[in-house]
Length: 557
Figure 1 (cartoon, one colour):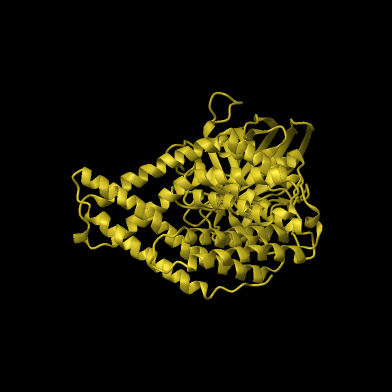
Figure 2 (cartoon, one colour):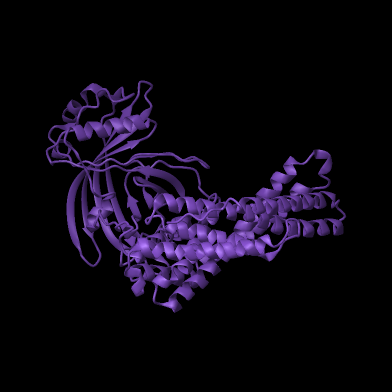
C-alpha cells in the first residue's frame, strides 16, 4: 500500500525497469454496481456485477460511464494528492485480457455504438454486451464464458436482435490487453475507484484487416463520488491529457468515424430534412426501447408504442414530401400492426394500475368479495400473455422487414419535389391541414351534448389531437417555441379525451368481471360500483373537453 501523496513515485518504486509502467496513453470509463430495481453509475475498467435484471434471463447488468483520454507515450501519471477522499493507493495488480468481438459483417452493432465480446482473463471473464445509455453512459450485460467460444448466449443475442435481425454474428476484432490496476482507497480502506493502465494490441478480422497498438488509462468509480471522478479528469487534463475521440477500444480497433452525426434541419433548409430528422429520432427510440421491452422494463412497451405511433402519424402529415405512395402505405400499415401488438400489453398494464388505484381508494366496507385478487388475476395474466405475444412478434420476420424498410427510407428517402423547398414555407402549411382536421373532428364531437354517452366522434377527435401533436413536435426546427405551444395545446385535447377512452375500455372489462363474479358465486356489487364511478369519470372528461376546447388556439408556425 502506498500513500496518495506519492502516487507518481510509487509507480517507479514498484517497477522502474518496466517501460509499460513508465509510458501512458490515457482513457477513463466508469461504473458502479446496479442492484435489482435501481440505477447506478460507474467509471471504467472494472465491470461490477449487479443483480439478475430479469428472472427469465441469466445476464447480470451494470451501468458504465466512460471518459477516454489520449496522452503522449512518455507521459507520467499525475499525483493523486488532494483528490477528494483518497487516502492511499494500492500497488498495481497485473491482468492479461484477451477479447474477441462479434458483429454482423457490415458492423451493425459497432455502428450503433454497441459492443459484444467474449473475454478471458481478469476478474470478469465472460460474455459482455454494452448498449448505449446516454452521451457517456453504457449499460453492460454479462454472461458466463460457456464451453463454445463462437456461440453467443441467447440472452445477449435477444438484446441486439433489433440490430442484427436474421443476420449472422461473426468475429470482427480481437483485442489483447495488458492491464495494471491501481485501487484508490479512503481512510476506512474502502475502494473509491480503480485506475487501469492498459497496453492494447488489436487485430481487425473483417473486410479491412489490420493491427493497431496503443495505450490507455481508465478510471472507474467504485464507491467514490462523482466529485472524485471530476477531480481525476481535471488532474489529467491539467497535465496535458487530451480527451479521446473514441468511446471504446473497439471503435479505435475498427477505425470507425467517431464524429459521424447528422446535420440538424433548419427553417431555411429543405422541408424533407425536417421530416427525416424526426423519423430518424423515432427509429432510434424504437431500437433503444426494443431491448428494454424484452427485459420487461418499466414503461418500455409504452415508449416503444409511442415511437411507432409518432412515425405513422408523421408519415401521414408529411406524405406530400414523399414520392412513393406504396412505401408510405406499407410503412403506415406495418407500424399500425406493431402498435397494435404492443397496445395489447399496454392496455392491460394501464387498466391494471387504474383499477388497483380505484379499489384502494374505496372504503373497505364497499369492497365486497376478492375484487383486488380478481383484478390481479385477470389483468396480470392478460399482460403476461400480451407481453409474450409482443416478444414473439419482435423475433419475427415481419418485424425485421419493417425495420429494414424504415432504415431504407431514412438512408434513401424518395423525396418529392416539394421536399426540396424551404421548410419555413412548406412545413407550416402541412401542419395547418392537421389543425383543420382536428377542428372538424372537434365540431363533430361537440354536437353531442355532454352526458350522451360514448360517441365515436370523441374517439376520432382524440386521434386527430394526437396526430396534430406529433406533427407539431416534428416541426420544431421551423419554430421551436411556437411548435411546442401548438403541441401542448393538441396534447391537452388528447389527454382529456384519452381519459374518456380509458374509461370506456375499463367499463367494458368491469361489466364482464361483474358477470363472471355472479356465475362464480361471488358478490358483484363492487364491480357495479366501480363501473358507475368510471361512467361518472367519463361524463366529467366529456364535459371537460367541451370546456377545454374553447381555450384551444391555433398557434401559427
